[in-house]
Image (cartoon, rainbow, N blue to C red; front, side, top):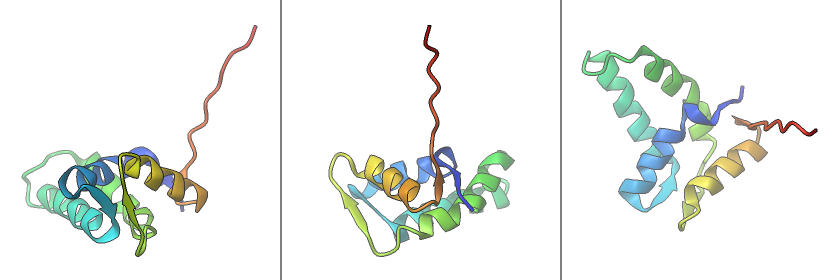
Length: 96
């Protein structure tokens, strides 16, 4: 089941900011940490918990790939959209 990019965006970005690249295990660890904060009552945002839970499969789909460089986050998003794990964003433009 695909999820919106916003479901996992913060985890992917945080992994990139901390590690300088994006890879599955660090991204999953960060997502698990965020969920544990909610379970321990440190965070009171239930939406973050639900989004993190739903996004675990999408993060797991990164597999053994390592995304490097200044476009790493965008590359992860593109890969996950192509693989069907992230819902593509649809833009609508009005034309007159």
